[in-house]
Image (tube, rainbow, N blue to C red):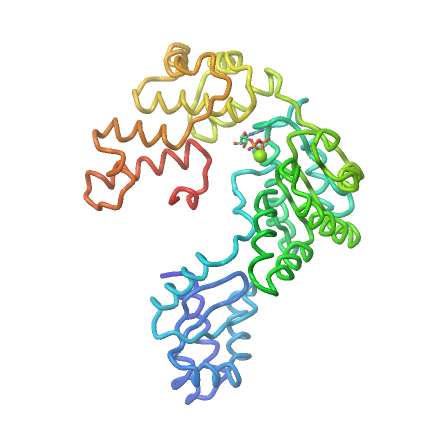
Amino acid sequence: MESYEILWKTALDEIEKTVSTISFEAYVKMLEPVDVKANTLVLITKTKLFADHVADNLKNKIVAAVSKVNPSITEVEICVFASKEDYYKDALEKENNAPPTGSAINPKFTFDNFVVGSSNQMIYAAAKAVAENPGDAFNPLFIYGGSGLGKTHILMAIANYLKINSPQINVLYATCDQFTNQFITSLSRGKRAPEDFRNKYRNVDVLLIDDVQFLSKKPETQTEFFHTFNELIMQNKQIVLTCDRPPKEINVLEDRLRTRFEGGLLADVQPPDLETKIAILKKKSEEQKTYIELKVLSYIAEKSDLDVRSLIGRLTKVIFASKLLEKPITIDLVNEALKESAGEIQEELQVDDIIKCVSDFYHISKSDLVGKKKNKEFTEPRHVCIYLITELMSLPQEFIGR
Ligand code: ADP
Ligand code: MG
């Protein structure tokens, strides 16, 4: 039973106590719970007349009963649908047609699983301060450094921290590309769209924008961003930006934006030293419930003169090889697993690598593996594949479908 069904079932007992028997039997019992969206329980009924009557006469009592059962639900929406299936079909269509919102925040990127060393302690401390006192600490906080060093991780850690510790705070995470694309789309989507876009970005308490180097050479988006920025700062709302370089090195950036970016705290992250690399490998292997001897971890760390993403990519390859070959993780296995990648500069496990390995292992074709056929010979490898992708690549489930 879904949680909203349990909620509704319990609430019915409460409602029965507060409305007349006729209302209860004729109206309330005809409602069907279909969804919970944020703080709202969604109920459906078949006709508009019915929905209107409930909304006008019974809704307050329903809301009161539902909140009594679950205090985080404070609203009830009554929609007209012939069946549950129709409701879900409609919801899916709406989702597919909606303008893109902020992107999904990976719940695995937290402060707790960010390994702190001398190379990244500045961005860690600054981000933590901002998460604890948004708007009061450093504003804006501008985090910069090379690719794969943990900028997105730390940005999402702020969002995850706030979600748990201050759920009333409205946080929006978006990549600079999303901001740009949504802005451009809004210009062509009718009169109200630009205003909706503005409202969305200017009515948040904390705005997190990833990879602002992509503002470069986009004058109109820069102007829009400039106004969003000013509006939020004026209201003491927190802004955190990440970038692959310091503001003064972003080409073709309006001076007024550059000075704004430099107006708060500039925090940089450097490539990790050996000790931090080992600590990261240790943490990541523990997260994957794999025990690896310290001497082997040091060996992987020494072998890679790389950023954190690539470092984790190498570890993943080693763990993957050990699972596939059913061998313990030794220096020999590391050498074997990383043989091909020796000398490569960018090393990262790709989804395609996993798909290829799994299809080779089970002797089935790639298209059968990722296709829709429901035979057991395909579904089992498919599950293994999904498991490996979620576990080895720290991707949330929702990414896998794509
Ligand atoms: P960037 O945004 O700087 O390119 P990411 O934040 O995407 O880098 O980091 C790449 C990967 O490395 C992610 O999986 C992230 O969790 C991991 N990572 C980076 N730094 C650390 C760290 N200090 N501790 C743990 N994991 C880290
Ligand atoms: Mg990033």
